Image (cartoon, rainbow, N blue to C red; front, side):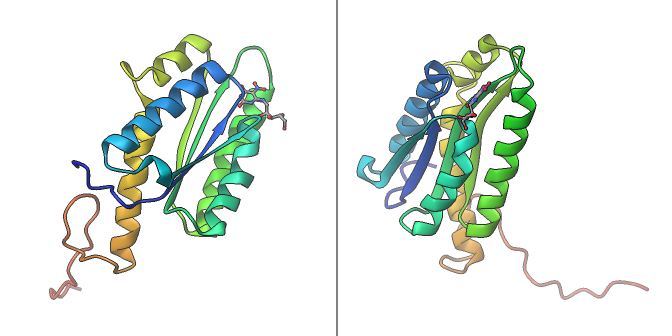
Length: 172
Ligand code: INI
């Protein structure tokens, strides 16, 4: 992909809850965006108390119009609490809904794990690096949406390509 993401404007909404983990997700995400060419000044970061608060802020950022994609970062860890089910269901539903309603790509970078150790492994840039993955997905989705909206050629390479209209007739 090189540094082809120059000029993109990216919003990040990151939960403070489980800060040790979300801090790592956020750091790795910003590093990956910059390494792909996104300028630091074009990355807008908003912190929210917990994952539950992510969808509203993500949608507000998207509809305000200053970003090409929004990356949502959080860590919901089961522990012993039934909160896990409610929060993880609500944040995933809410982020999906916010993306559909705003038509701005939203990336689901919210870890949902059984244990703190699993979350740390997924956030670790030297292991699963989910923060870095979220950055790459955001860049890819901006390009996909631009192609679909005709801002760039459908054969521009990378990501999804639109099929040429079929000239073949189907039997039957
Ligand atoms: N928020 C998280 O981001 N992760 C969690 O694991 C979590 N748990 O377990 O409760 C959590 N709770 C806070 C929640 O997201 C809201 O901030 C809070 O309920 C206020 O609305």
